[in-house]
Amino acid sequence: MGVTKGYVANEKFLMISPVKLRRVANIVRNKPYTEAIDILDALPQKASVFLSKAIKSAASNGLSQNRMLDEEMLYIKELQINEGPRMKRVWARGRGRRDILLKRMSHIYVVVDEKNKVGE
Image (tube, rainbow, N blue to C red; front, side, top):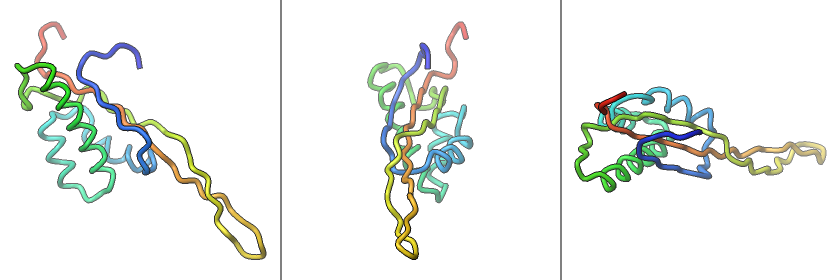
């Protein structure tokens, strides 16, 4: 991850596949904060709820740390969808056999920063 400046939020152990989250995350990556929230509110996918919550949390962290900020000044600087642990469940099959059902989890890492910083 390295040193990233901005306002950070983490969401961990979400019960959704990282592939499903990344599909929605690619739509809002590097967009302004208000535009990203509008897009996520309009999408029907379950992943949009998780992403919206994480992005709002990062923006809230920024607004509470810096009172001079406004929502219009923020954009999504970094958005990572990482794979969490997998829960293994048994799925009964015919003739006494079984399959393993993997329930995948995800972690979201969001960095929100100011649009017009001097020196970038």
